[in-house]
Amino acid sequence: MAGSRLIYLLRHGRIQNSGEQRRYIGQLDVPLDPEGIRQAERLRERLAPVEFQKIFCSDLERSRETARILAGANAGEVVVCPELREIHLGEWEGMSFAEVVRRFPEKFEARGRDIAYYRIAGGESFADCAQRMLPAYQKIVAEKADPVAIVGHAGVNRLILCHLLGMPIANLFRIVQDFACVNVIQYNGVNPQVRLINAVAV
Image 1 (cartoon, one colour):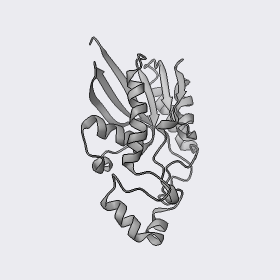
Image 2 (cartoon, rainbow, N blue to C red; image 1 turned 90 degrees about the vertical axis):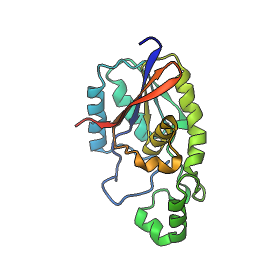
Image 3 (spheres, one colour; image 1 turned 30 degrees about the vertical axis):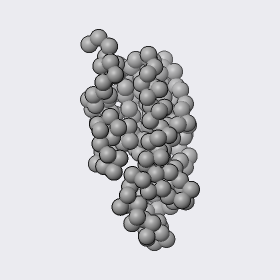
């Protein structure tokens, strides 16, 4: 189709300690674990037929490492964009969910009531994250490179998909983003269509 181009929106592979208690990991710089590396390698195999001109990633190691593995399948240039970082979770960074509930029960409940706009002390709200990140996404979309990949994060990807689907940010957790998943966005001119969400290689 004339004027059609594809954006592959990916999530990084599994990270170290992800099998333990659920934790708030936003901008902590946690690397991939061995399974995360294997997931990224399977992602590379699955997407080998796609000749990416550019692969964009955040500056967090889990995103950069997944992008480097993915780039091994083709000559695509890896471009690091700090604006694509995951949401900053402030004073909750690194804490388990159980610890946050125990130490900050009222704040935990308040965030649950207003997931879009509640700002954890020292961190961002999801609305803040969207304001920071979406201009970088739009800049990537405006580039002439086609196709391109973006190795994002669960929160970042959900915010991009909410934006494209016209969904309120408050509904972002209705969108599943598993480790090393694939979302595909097709642009016909300036009009986006979300063609695939959360596809995972097995």
